[in-house]
Image (cartoon, rainbow, N blue to C red):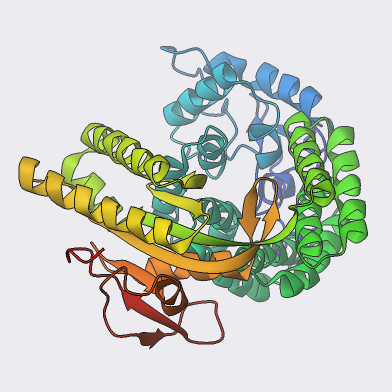
Length: 461
């Protein structure tokens, strides 16, 4: 067979995917590369004919299973390095239709043939709720991938998503910056679409819904231009959320319904379910008399230098430590009337009805860890941020600038420290000893915020 000539740079990303057509046409080489930075799924059979993925996900899964089954039996080495599981499982398949036995086999096959199945593997781990493992896996792949900016561009969109799930907005922002730089260098529609979506995700997480909506709308248009319906629908869900935060519920509803219809047409049942859940929660909030903005005190915690700790003690010991940490903190949250809003990796996001309960809980956390350190020789170093503010209630949780401020206050704290906004301490005068107020510039917040360090070792509380 005559080898197809390599694609021109201009062709990269122009034709993101067709659906499961096996053809030795001159476009075959392009299909292996141009699945786009957000996905990149390609299978090859013994004739080196690519399977190009786009339309019906259930049918794509069956086609994928048939093509890759010769190398997916545990304990059996693939007959040929040309028979391989997806080089980089598409987000659309990993997160919507593949059942776990098949995905485990796919991972096995990728290992045999020496392929690094990223970002599909990390997206699969994320779908299974393994945020830390997902972030570490894709982070390792990015560290190792230094030979090609295009290859990095394929990994970065997923890295932005996973970083935000881990509540690391700074890490996601750096990845989005790099992706935008790569898109500017190669100037392809698919890379620009991925960069717009990633930037919109970061802005939305940072509380800038207006800017997020503007750039996400551009991302939706670009995904539509390159005929990538799944990516367009996913960007549309984010756009709907950004519009809803600004108070335009009708506009948000239109975007969400359009995204849902696209997911349903593709057979992406998990995404359909997620959109339905979000729509129902949004409608419930709008009907509730308590919907809208609420004044709460938010508490954020996370273990300092957890990656270094994992390397020092090993995975098994880390999991044991994390289990003890989570159980201890959850018991303290419940004892002080806190409601857990989110738990990503080794950090918690908790809401309290009043500042005194939140600060008392933070003091109890540091005191408990210090006691364990004295009695048993070790406990992880945890930093805590506390902020009383108003926020928008959405889907059983809280969003908005106030939540972002609280998270950034937590990130500004040192190991073993409780950092609270000055307003939070002012709401409970005389209850807690604290340092003198100081102004800090929080990342993503335009105005400086005055904070104090709570002296949790003091008996005054």
